[in-house]
Image (cartoon, rainbow, N blue to C red; front, side, top):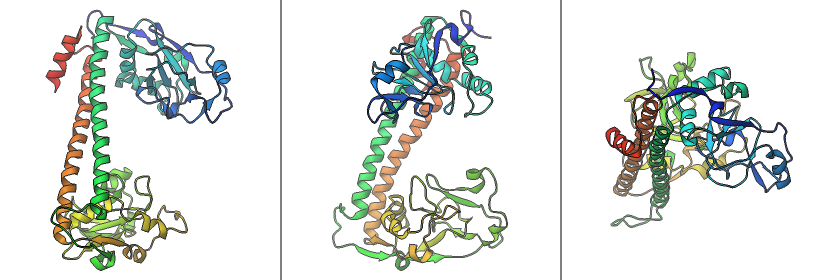
Length: 410
C-alpha cells in the first residue's frame, strides 16, 4: 500500500518523451556535442566528454523536432540502459542514436530523475528490455513505464533531500580526488628522494632487486590453502571471487606457496598498471598464487612497508616498459622474464629512513581510506533513504521535514 494522495501513473502522463532522429550524421572535429548512451551518467548531463560532434547546420536538422530546457532528462535506451542525466545549462547538444529526451510536464523533473534511478524503475526497465543491458527498450514500453507519484509539494521536498545527499557525495568525491592527488605528489617526492625528511642526509643507494631480495619458488605442499590472484586495483583477492569460479584446475599443483610479507609480480598488463603490478601478501599467513607470478622476499635490513608503497607508486614502470619489446602473449602476460624483472633497480635509503617514509605514507593512506569509507557510507545511506522516500515509508512535505530526516539518518 502507498500513502493517501499518492498514485501510480505512466511516464508519458507526466512527461513528454521525444526520440532521437535515426540517422548517423557526418561528424566534425569541433562543433556541437552528440550525446550517446556511453556518455550518459546519473547526474548532470556531461557536454565535455562526448568526442562526436556535428556542425551547427546538422544540429539544427537533428534537433528541429524538439526543444530542450534546463531540468529536462536525457535517457539511454541501450548500452547504459535506463540511465538518465539532467540538463543544467542552455548549451546546445544533439540526441544521438538510442537516446531520448524526457521533458517533465506535470511533475518535478528532479523528482522524476530520482524515480527513474530507483531500484524499482531500473528493474522494470531491465525486464522490459529483455534482461540485458545491451538490449533496447521500446519507446512504447518506456512511455508506459509506471511511476509512483506523490503530491507535487512532496515531490519537491523529496527531490531536495536527495539532491542534498548527492551534493554531500559529490563533495566527498572531490575531497578523495584531492587527497589522492596530494598523496601521489608526496609519494613522487619522498619515494624518489627529491624530498628528504628532516634529520636524514646522505646519498641513497641504488640496488637491483635481486641484490636486496631473494626469489621465492616454493611449490604447493598439498595443504588446504587459499588460492589467490592479483587484482591491479585491489591486490590479492580470492581467485573464485575475481573470476566467479575456480580457475586453477590441475595446474594448482605447480602454484607457488607464498607466505605473509612476501611479494609477487603479476606481469599481466592493466589500465592501472600497464607493465604489471607488485603486491605483498598481507591478509593471509600463507596462500597459493599462480606459478607465472615472480615472487620474492626482501632480505634483512629492508622495510617491506617502504617497498610496498614504492611498488604501489609504480616506480618500476619505465624500466619494465623498456623490457617489453614483443607485445603481449596470447595469455595476456607481458614478455618479461623473472631474470629481467629481478634485474630492475630500486632506491635504497637507510632502514630508518625507509620506515620514516613508510610512516608518512601510511598516515596519508589512512586519511584517504577514511574518506573512501565515508563516501561508501553516504552512498549506502542515500540508497536506503531513497527507497523509503519513493515508496512513502518516510513522509515529508517541506524542507523542514527534510532537514530533520538528514539529522536522524546520519
